[in-house]
Image (cartoon, helix red, strand yellow):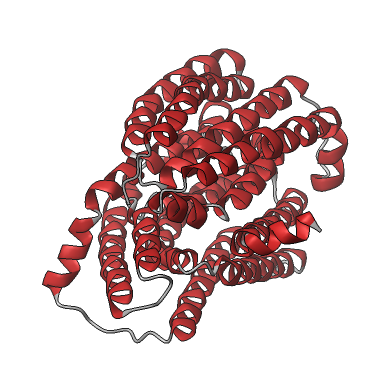
Length: 445
């Protein structure tokens, strides 16, 4: 009975967390299925290239220059100040950031077309397969162009989160990945397209589904797409520009660490090694993704409770995640994955891989990320990003140095070791910083 009463008191929080976890779960499962199909139907080098290109999907969260995260915080605060009642100011603020993001996307497309053809991707990735060398430059350019167009569409999630409608966004996100899984499966099982054509089609479908999510948002909120005076747009953009810059520095640093590892595995050891590296990494990415999904449901609650002075509630939710969720996901389930990874990989991808050293390093890295992300998500929800951004920016070159150093001597295991070593200091520092923030009652939204 007490559990039922607890659920009723925190219904919005519980629904948001469960919905977000469900959506990330669907994404994770569908991506695992997609990976299994790719491992069976692609050549070794095509599979390595696929792993790198798929990892670019997550670069969209850095291509927004931090404005999406700042928009989420600001809209959440605006909704809280209006006691949950929608108003025109909320819509206009969203549109201002959306239009600005679209302008950034167009500039990015122009830039990538100008410089993309001059980047020696074949040499960077040590590509041996002749057919890949013939299309690699154009393929990368087209995919990045699609990602730049997609960046403003991600802003729809900010609105759903602000109105405590994460369950709607989660359902749309789940549908998106289920459709992508079926598209990818049908194309490859029936060999309907060549590898480059298939990759472009996959990303185009991803983009179209993003447009549909945006359309659903406008229909649900009964908003009309109107043009705002440039002066109003610029005022709203400037209003969150400093916080956005901090989010961008944080996101771009995180992207360097997360995406750089797969890319550098290919660059230092070849595309074939990148493929093996990515499937082991993805086993633990499942845990990190599940944890982030669960934590996302707490973001509106963190922001509103802090803004209303309920720091005890913020503290209790933080400790619930640190000392219950993190140990279960990353020690219990992470230990199972470590012990049985050869069997899991064989069933999943058909590949025979047995590397306890690499798997152990990824297990440790996942645990550190779980602990660090718990503190980071709380700080982000309070708009306290500056210290994180500067710290992450300082760590990024250290990560690259360690990656090249250990990657040259230890191979892909060295890349994983570099990730662990570069993560340790930040996890320690922000564990203490988060508690200081709660004690002082600091908030910046």
